[in-house]
Length: 301
Image 1 (cartoon, helix red, strand yellow):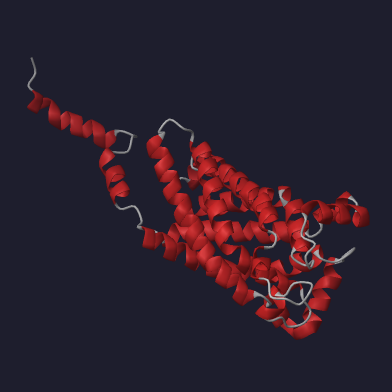
Image 2 (cartoon, rainbow, N blue to C red):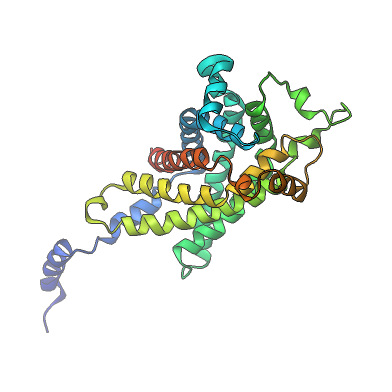
């Protein structure tokens, strides 16, 4: 019988030549997982960068969706004529005040939900874990951030300055704080499907890209491409809900989904539900790509 000591060096050589990664680095990676604070800071920083890049597209998208028979170039021109480049950054303060806490909450809850689900049910498919985690995290985040989104959308669509008091007055000129949560239902109907579809597609795409030889060592590129493609498709599919939401937040008190949907259909037909789809997709693709790649990069520090 051969002693174990004589086999041990050969065993080590076999492990060094093996294509299977050793277990030690995997353990170290798990131990060095980002803290909650790192996740919040990384997500908030990524959201700030993303907002600065895509806010002009968001302004154009909102205006296209709240106009009757809009023309893209005419909308861009009229927006610029208001106050030059500054017009494309209307609502940026509200956008940042929404995106920073929103992303901080959302990505932190999402990552930790994934960890909990994966540990409780290790046999569950990765894409299904992403689906469940995004569903729960999006509901929590939406309830917290809806007031900020209402203010941002109203300011972007308006051609004149609005104060917070203007935004919370009802049709009888009475202050109604609950108006800040106007459109919560439609926001959930838009954002929950978007998030679940986005993260499911992102998980599938990033897994496939990981097996592409020239991308295996470039996780940043994998995340950017996956985020870009997943964000584009998810944005296109959920455009009708986004159009209804934008119109609900521009109507004083008439915030019933079926009322707004019927009004859009009667005035513009089915095409009315896809107003602004081009700027929405053009906005969502780089937004998702920048957000996820920047977040994954920053949370490593």
